[in-house]
Length: 218
Image (tube, rainbow, N blue to C red; front, side, top):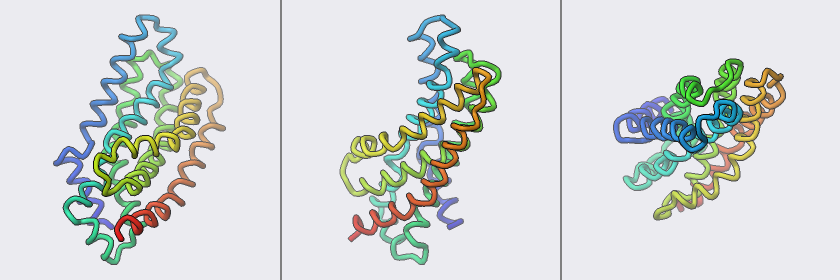
């Protein structure tokens, strides 16, 4: 598992696996929003939590199409399927590597980009906590979507259509927690829901993705 994890990290950093791509996309989304909304700082402050969360979600989605497709194309996925490591572990490791190379940079960049959207001072800490709690679920759900569409030519669009509805609860509670933090309200309830969603996804999705991969590899 350790070898597979570091292999995926190396591929992501070296072969354009999404490390810089997701971060650049996140930056572009946040920078363009003030141009489209205008100089109304109060309006920017109100929509900042939702914009930051939506940008992070789309940035995570951007790099998912290569999560398993590269291993499928070069035959590495067949070797992993016959290795002692179960497919559930393979999916979990790949989702973890995806979060480290895509989700974690977004978490670190979000407070800096929040300044561009005039995010209220009280919202920065809650925004970071919500992203830390929610982005692992985005990577794990994305790994499940990648397993569903592996081997399908140009399956990126289909994967997006399958994954986006599953992202909605995480987006709702993540943005709500950040909004409450920015307005000085108690964000405990949405953060607990967000943590519950992530824990449920991490517990169930590896088994669902492993079962789908076994079917696709037959």
